[in-house]
Image (cartoon, rainbow, N blue to C red; front, side):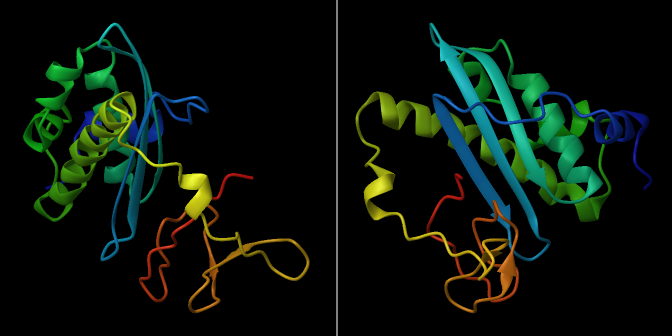
Length: 174
């Protein structure tokens, strides 16, 4: 199955790309097998997702899924957004090849994780991550980011190392 025109449009012209620095909720998911990583940021007002943005490292399908999930979620109540499924995302994109359906799972999971993070923050359940953050490891010249376990260079915002598979337990927020 080839990509639909909708998938290609969302890949070439993704909607809602970026980060919300003061996000009310952040969802981060990834698939170490295929290397796709998605971050979804939400801003909530009166129980409605007022703004939503994403940053994705992955294939064209992963980018299209991220774009579509943000389009579907924007303006919805939290309850409505929690009901968006991977099937909804794939259908809204006009279908995905079978080997790319896992991307739609990641999109729905990232959105749901952002909503859960928002609700946990609101309830005071989220600990102060800054206290437990490991020191960010940079190269000798101050460039690049390195895995604290295998010491190979990683992507600056990767939550896990693509080389050894270890979770990188710090945020790259500089």
